[in-house]
Length: 316
Ligand SMILES: NC(=O)C1=CN([C@@H]2O[C@H](COP(=O)(O)OP(=O)(O)OC[C@H]3O[C@@H](n4cnc5c(N)ncnc54)[C@H](OP(=O)(O)O)[C@@H]3O)[C@@H](O)[C@H]2O)C=CC1
Ligand SMILES: O=C[C@H](O)[C@@H](O)[C@@H](O)[C@H](O)C(=O)O
Image 1 (cartoon, rainbow, N blue to C red):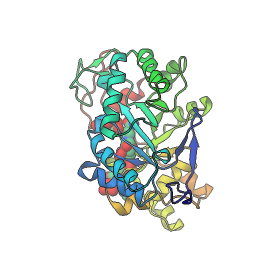
Image 2: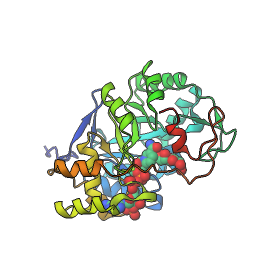
Image 3: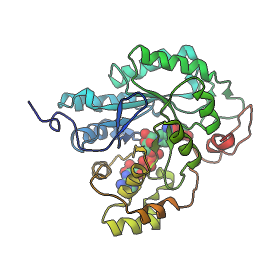
């Protein structure tokens, strides 16, 4: 009998979700992963030991992610050791669209279930809307109706866990009236989201930190505080940022299209960031990542906003 490690398990932290399922601490992000996506997914799993992959229908690469997953499983990695997340895009935040949209995602990913399915942003958009949307492209969002359909996906065995991204405390409290949820939330030293993080901790909700390196627009790996701590610990700045997220109690989904970075980014176990350095990272100035530039972001009920992140903040 091959060892657990040989059969696909790797030594890394796991977080326990409210459902009792476990989520590997580090996942491979795939937003803007481009033409290398299938290779990156396969390499991450078969050569670097990743068992968690984060993607979304809106990234336009679920078929590529599916090819990478298929190749990894053909190489002997058992599906039960993989944790795959995808997301329901804003144009499909309509109850009757949830089942067919998820089925399309499963077809493109070549999977018969997802480990986690997330509402990508808490606002519904017209078909073909821009991001950030223009005036009149934001529609009413039947949050409870969509959530009921998401819960039916769990009952039908198509999804093991459901959650939300980019929710504010106000929206989270509204949704908590009718469900238990594990949200993914932007979390990096450059935008710590302390308010929503504390709210999730109180509610026992697991948080996944996305854009842990500050995303490509504001890559924190070059921040002087991060670089100083990395030099002191003899680790890369990327590893320090990823470790910070894990030590804070979140899972984390760094993206890279470079094999050596994919391998580097999961080498974050077996060491700790000392408390004084952890605190120094927590003190890095919050500087929100503005989504797709400062175009006017108009929401017909509250707008205008300068960006999606400002709408996100509106009713925090
Ligand atoms: N739920 C949501 O709304 C959101 C979810 N996400 C998810 O989170 C994932 C990660 O966030 P993302 O915004 O992609 O950005 P990250 O914070 O993961 O940063 C990715 C950028 O950092 C570079 N990079 C990767 N590794 C290193 C390293 N070790 N040192 C220095 N630079 C590095 C990458 O370049 P290169 O590729 O050249 O290595 C890329 O430019 C996404 O891919 C997506 O899956 C992201 C945003 C929103
Ligand atoms: O998941 C990543 C992000 O949420 C991304 O999907 C949105 O931010 C949108 O595509 C955008 O470009 O602003």
